[in-house]
Image (cartoon, rainbow, N blue to C red; front, side, top):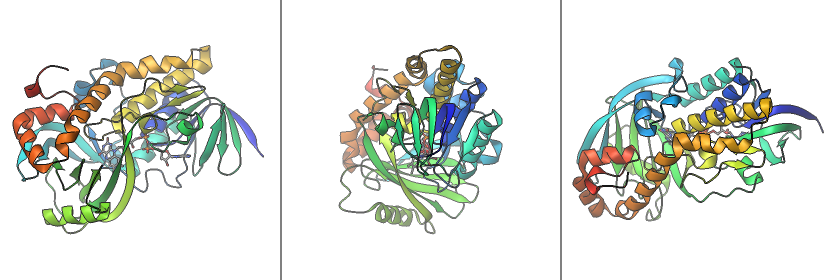
Length: 368
Ligand SMILES: Cc1cc2nc3c(=O)[nH]c(=O)nc-3n(C[C@H](O)[C@H](O)[C@H](O)COP(=O)(O)OP(=O)(O)OC[C@H]3O[C@@H](n4cnc5c(N)ncnc54)[C@H](O)[C@@H]3O)c2cc1C
């Protein structure tokens, strides 16, 4: 059995892993970035929407975050959007401004991984990890890498978290995503109600058509995700939805700690997702950057790995915890179309804007 050594091994080359590897390598650590996929970013398991850095600065209110972390790779950007609409079960629309872009994850994930390589990290794929034991990363091929730090950036079904005995409380939302051909307006549409029981459906404009899909949790009258998507696409009069994939979004409170022994957990592996809308790309990038920074400091001067917790918490904890509370409060309403209709009418576009930004709706008062 072959065995080698590295300062930092990052498991998973999604947005969290590539940012982690980039900042770890920039900090001088010998960094290996592993991903089990033969092609990074493919198949696409994402709606592919990223808010602008200005919107993220408003949501996360951490000025030190916006120093280049969100320079999105130009080759991955597809369409700009300026508006979001939340659509009630009756079809009534509530619109508010939200700047962002749609990206092609197939290009986005590769570009972020190449930036990590450019900073000095060594990218290896396909390279699946089957287990991590006290800093020893065991590969599907039978090889091993001894690492001083392991960064778990391996998504919602994380081998690194499981190996470290970490079980975060969460609800796993079932999601389906697909491509719909046609001409779509430059805005993000979210559809609520029985179209996507307990969750929502979306259309996000792309260069050639739209990314369409939905996420559901709880009762869906025995309907499969595909059946729900067929009904959604038909209700909008679109010309089908192809290239379907299914995956999970972990919705839960942010963890008390994302450090377990020599492992640091990031992105979906640590539940770091915006609970009210299931968005996890920006939080993956932020937590990845923070984990890579601390891993490199640990290698360089012995900074304790637990320094990762206060760093990611300063950037993410407050808004993510608030978003989780808002989501929990809204869940009973989201299970009934008439209640949802009334609730959306009561809080209006301003309140829905608040919810998407992880804030209590202004109309319900207090608690932010
Ligand atoms: C259908 C759907 C739509 C979504 N839409 C949006 C959206 O529009 N905007 C948004 O911000 N968020 C969205 N999300 C959430 C977003 O996709 C995730 O939060 C984000 O990708 C998390 O990044 P990550 O780097 O933590 O994990 P991932 O992007 O999941 O990357 C994990 C990587 O780890 C690799 N990996 C996994 N296990 C192993 C292993 N054992 N060994 C080696 N490699 C491994 C995988 O191959 C993968 O490349 C959506 C999610 C879904 C499912």
